[in-house]
Image 1 (tube, rainbow, N blue to C red):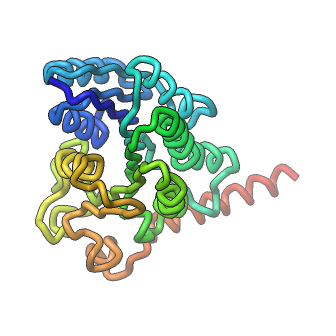
Image 2: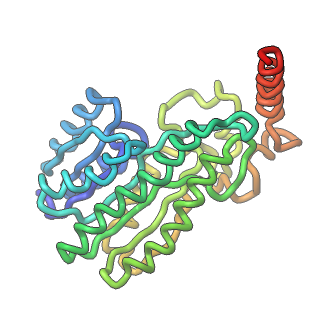
Length: 281
């Protein structure tokens, strides 16, 4: 039996978004979620949610498109009649070097990592305001937004931008009793791979001794979206098992925290591009 409330989760066909969608359904929320390319997986998640006795629909939407992020909440409102919460989760982890990034790559990355998130949240907020719903907006960011690494000037920068934007949105939307918060996950093993085979031994680097799971993030999301967090807004909750506490994650794995392989690779690409350009002149 549902509670009558509707939660929209972007990127709900797998990983963190899937975990949040299933958790909210287990608490009696009707769930709408988006997917980008995993239609078969989305159908399976829809069936799992429906088994919990709540309504569920899924929608194809790419957060990097110009119109999809705003159109998604409009479609959910039309189908369900209301939106009480939106979780802006869908984002692709894109890494570039400042030496070689192109304007096109940068536009595409910022579109889906920041602009799409804000546009989706804004469209949902407009319905909350119109319908006089004291709703909740939740951005899934990352500890990369708080801790720089060699490869993440764009990914980490956009996550940091979301956390900063959320504070202003929390102020702007407070007269409507709409709360805005963020969750910054750490090392979450969304693909359930054997951690010992990865380049960095993340499990050994986390003070609590393991990587995170979708359920860890989902539990925090359910709290922030629920009534028990009704007096919390403009905050970022780090859910990382203490991963970020000691400082730069790479500093745990090696004495020098700069990933020199990444630096060398992009230096060589820059030199090769200059050499090719010289030969064509």
